[in-house]
Image 1 (cartoon, helix red, strand yellow):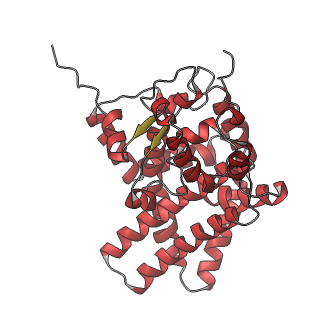
Image 2 (cartoon, one colour):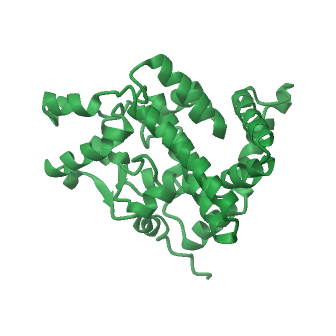
Length: 308
């Protein structure tokens, strides 16, 4: 099928407005990456200093959400929006965002740009993430249980690490940077006398909260969105509150409708872009949900079949 329609920014914004939103900063993207890692280590330190079940659960949630944040910042790097220098953009996107959680920037960029080119069409590689919805509440509950109990993590990592054994490869070559980064992280924590935090405060969030919030992100972005020729209908925007932005949707990822129309705008400018679009009346052309709770309600409203 042909590529989806695009909108010329000049048809929406003045030259001054578009120049402001499309500008790539030499420090804001790096500040976001530093902030993600700062919160990861701060959450870990919180539990080390005040160990109890509540601080542990909160630390796991914070760290898992920032692991998703690293993936979101890798996504910005895939669009060349993380830094004004493409060399720095790619290095930071690969080693400080992609590698920690098991992705490769170049591979993701090829995959993701195809998603933008063929959004919600048969050629869209992300179509399986949205096509099954709506589902029943029971089905959604089972998925959440699989995420929080580590089943999703184990399935994904097994495929990632050993999916190419039949080709004579000991480990899938795309995971090399993941293994290198994580080995260095474990070595550093061990040298500091906190080897156990690698498993309790890095792997555990990655195995539980990260799969869940990744699933919520995928659902919120495209599930149950009626895509039309209008590019403003290609994705959902979710009006996340402060708690959702802290624990589910970091780094303005909830402005996904805006991102799909103007995909090279850096994430740290999406909120301002969103506000101006609302002022210009574009809300009437967009799929906007009030919260992630309302998104899940939309996505799980399929009725359970009644036995004959």
